[in-house]
Length: 111
Image (cartoon, rainbow, N blue to C red; front, side):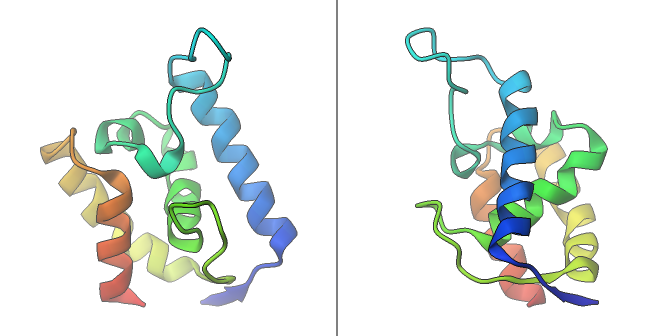
């Protein structure tokens, strides 16, 4: 199922993930900000998310470039659920691997 997301909807997803991630990651003592943006996450960071937040992290990584700029607004919910098991399997085996790189590689296969 393909949905067109508005910029506001994508922003809401990003804010939700960032808020949740901030509680999971150690803060930078000098700024109080999370230690790293989602584009720098390892698979271990992804696995540490609550299960219900994982699809949002996949969606954000799919919709945005590493620079934080939108790459598109098409959001395929079936596609997210298609790659999620592959991501979980890969990330459980390779916790130090780049979550971002794996999402981008898998979405190229599906979309």
